[in-house]
Length: 281
Image (cartoon, rainbow, N blue to C red; front, side, top):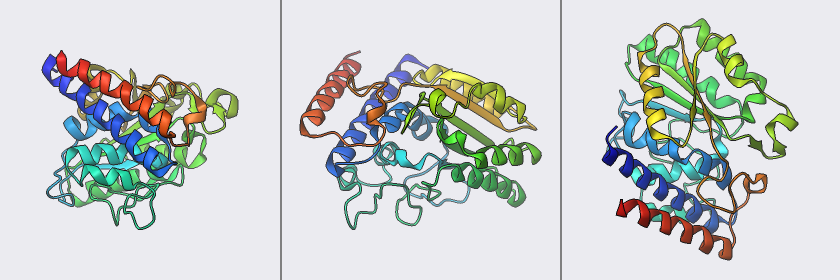
């Protein structure tokens, strides 16, 4: 990746974080913490990795993305809006009555959303089914799914991993956002899934662990995922919950609440400063 490409991704990720704050502030609710930790991943997927077309969101050969941790819809919506799937201003309608931008993604209403999600553990099962269906249909698309590290405490996740290995779904890429926090506290205190990498490997996956805020590491991991044949691939991302906002970072309380007016102003000021620094590079 060239320095200019990385700069443009960093700028886009900053704007995605702005969209998350805009949406959750307007809604007075939502899930900014996990959306922020995955903002760089959303940016990389929609601006570099995925074969998608905002002008033709249902094209049959498109890559599929399933947000298994569906509560982080504010991050997905911000990336989709920035990519051109729907107007940026609509982010301010998040969770409003009659808005198509519900608190969790709805494939029947939101352009670019491939699966309605929200019940944790189910998204990865759907993604595995999509990957098998693509193979049966002779579709060369790839399927990607993002899970939370608290979500992988769900037993259904491990059934899906077993399914993916059994059917040798090398067109499936499972991504786990390991920010260390879930709604009730640190994951290692609530119901520890560690060691995550070793457990996923034990289910027959090729696995790599990366810094989920480093675009160079993302590029290398996704390249390896595409090159891996005969087994499914998983990326475990070490991230910071609330990444990008000083008072949100690594704070479990920001799992599921929107910023008030004063917090909104501070968050946007921090992001405006970051954006200006990036654009001046």
